[in-house]
Length: 320
Image 1 (cartoon, rainbow, N blue to C red):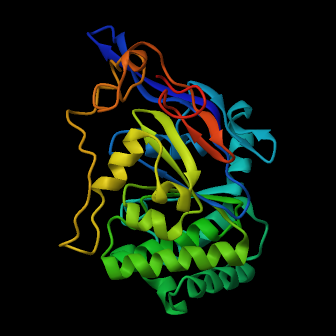
Image 2 (spheres, rainbow, N blue to C red):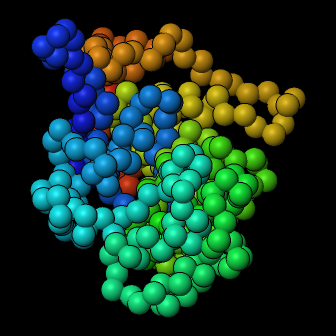
């Protein structure tokens, strides 16, 4: 991802005049290595899911680039995007809404093979059975419809569909948020096993820091359409650098009700992406903000090897 931007126009009146723009994604850049899991975290409405959809070009970017193995997906025409999309697949948040209720499980998993492959009917059926069994479903599940499965089984079916074309990258948008805790663990462990087996790269979108700590290798923290910190998982959880990342980790529950914790409490509401604040977008809520934060937008820069932060108070150029 290079400087990816997505702005949604706000139209009013009979002539649908554009009167404003929603800055959903505002200059996002990051990389994901083969076989790596990068988790994208942040509050609801910060633009995480929009980033995931931009990567697949389910929505068109306003500007910027999405490169996979050197190919800029944003520059491809419609047919080329369709062919290239076999290398990037998605697991959606709601496993019921993302599955066609009129198709059986077998048809759902077989459909990508029919659209992109040149397999015969028997070979497609064998591949479908193998995929269903690999994600923990029985072969006879092929004849069932989505409503006949539990939530966890439906998400397994969605994962099987995403795996059908053997993609390089899977975008997982809150894939376990709608599941029971015990089922969450099963699905997460399945994703990790599949990654090791197939060498998959994951962009894992979540707001659950417990899940993020379990599955991630690196973490990117997003606020109001921008990345504010990127770090290895262990480094981030040991000591976040950006005040927003610090507040996120401080707010996460811990399995020790009587433990005393020093929390960074942030006040106020998330600013509107229709009219973001000047300077650092977090400065109205940041307890450490100085004058420079209100007037100058911080750039995402590397402060230690492999660690990036967008804050005037961190790194060699920190404000006094």
